[in-house]
Structure formats: C-alpha cells, structure tokens
Image (cartoon, rainbow, N blue to C red; front, side, top):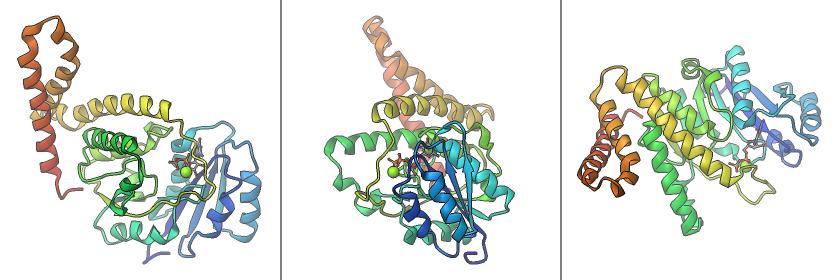
Length: 298
Ligand SMILES: Nc1nc2c(ncn2[C@@H]2O[C@H](COP(=O)(O)OP(=O)(O)O)[C@@H](O)[C@H]2O)c(=O)[nH]1
Ligand SMILES: [Mg+2]
C-alpha cells in the first residue's frame, strides 16, 4: 500500500535475462503486486522470474506463447491488475532503466487527485542536451506530432514508458483496441484524450542508461510506423472528440489536414496556392485554440 492505495507494477520483459533480476530486487516494499509479462523470450527471463517468485509472493508471471509487443504485454498486466482491484498501475521496464526512486513522484499526483495519468519526462532533467543535434530535431518533431495527435498539449517526452495510471481511468479505455507495438505509448494518450476528464501530468525524471540494456527498437521501422500511426490516430481523435459532436474545431482541423495533402498539387494547379496557405494557417490556428482551451486541464 502507498498512502492508502493498492499499487501494481507492470513489467514488460523480452529477452531480459541480464537485467530482470535487478529490476525485481529493486521494486519498493509498498508495491502490492508485480506483474511480469514474458513475451515469448528466447532466453532465461521466465526461469529467473520463477526463482524470484519463490522469495517474493507479490510477483506474478504472465507468459505469452507468441510475441505481442511491449503494448500487448503491458495490457495483459493491466488487465490482471484491474481484476486484482489495484488502485494505481505503474509500468517499469524489465531492463532496469526505470529508477524506483521516482515511483512516488509518479504516484503522488494520482493519490492526491491532481491527475489520473502521469508520465515521466526526461527533457525536464536536461536529457535533450545529451543528444546529438539530429536526435534533438527528431525528438522535437515527434513531440510536436504527438501533441497534435493526442491533444495533450502540455505533455512532452511521449515515448517515455515510465508511467502510472489509475485503474479507474484505465477502465474507461477499451484496452483491447490499443496499439500493441512501440506506438502503444502514443495510442494510450490518444485514447485517453477522447475520454472526458482523464487528466495527465508530466513528471521530471531521469532514465538510466549504460547499465547493460539493449533497446529492441528498430528506429527505421519505428519512425515510419509511428508517423503513419499518429496521422491516422489524429484523424480518428478529431472525429471522435469534435466532428461527431458538431464542434467547429474538428472541421477546421480537417480543412487544414487536407491542405497539407494538397501541397504537391501546387505544381499542377498553381492557382490553388492561396487556398493551401489559408488551410495551413487554419490548421495552425486550430492547434493554438486547442492548446489554449485545454491548458490547465491536463
Ligand atoms: N513483453 C514485451 N516486452 C518488450 C517487447 N519489446 C520490448 N519489451 C520490453 O519493454 C521494455 C522497453 O523496451 P526497450 O526496447 O528497452 O525500449 P527503450 O528502452 O525505449 O529503448 C523493456 O523492458 C523490454 O524488455 C516485447 O515485444 N514484449
Ligand atoms: Mg530499454
């Protein structure tokens, strides 16, 4: 129990035999349940977890016979946590990159009723300065695209997987519809945003690097998949949140989006240029209005 709330920690793990032990050892005593999902690892991840279960009855191992991706693993842990009536569910990676000293910072705003969903933010801890200029640019772009797609304009570092969310908020989201690969982080924000009243807060924290971890992300695939996904999800979100309810913001967003896609046709029909420029300005104005409207909400 943490300040009267039952806490479940979900640990996605794929081929983490080197670091899963250290991760489990460090889980604080106030955590009530630890759900590890071994997503069809080819190494000894499960055997190591089984050894830990003998010493720590809070641990539960969920084994997948086919790999479902990091999102698929987290979703299965969360479903268990909801059944077990945990009040708050946090995620900590199986490669020990998430320092438990920050867990209270993620839990406190939820316990205090200030937020339903908290996400670590490395940028507030000077992480950006440690990247190359090229990665800084990529990060900036992904950050911006995620704000537009998700509507959480105050949240940065969207790919940060160190998160906590109340079971109450989670139960309002259809977990089965969430994207299961790395864009899971973005999709959760997008789906949370269309549910009225799920508030989000960024928590400054550092992620551990150079501890022997090996990222499984293939960056080429990730950038392509995530950009396409964000575009599709943005259109889905504005339809759900604005167009279906007859809100003008949805239509202005839509006009703006269409204008971006018409840019290549400027070379064929020169006279459409002013319309495209107006469409893009309408898009930018829609972003400003939405970010202003939601300021303080999330
Ligand atoms: N269950 C499961 N976990 C995964 C999968 N891919 C990655 N993970 C875990 O998710 C966490 C974060 O993945 P990682 O590749 O380290 O991402 P990064 O730290 O953001 O570069 C780690 O604990 C991985 O073991 C997967 O396909 N299934
Ligand atoms: Mg990692």
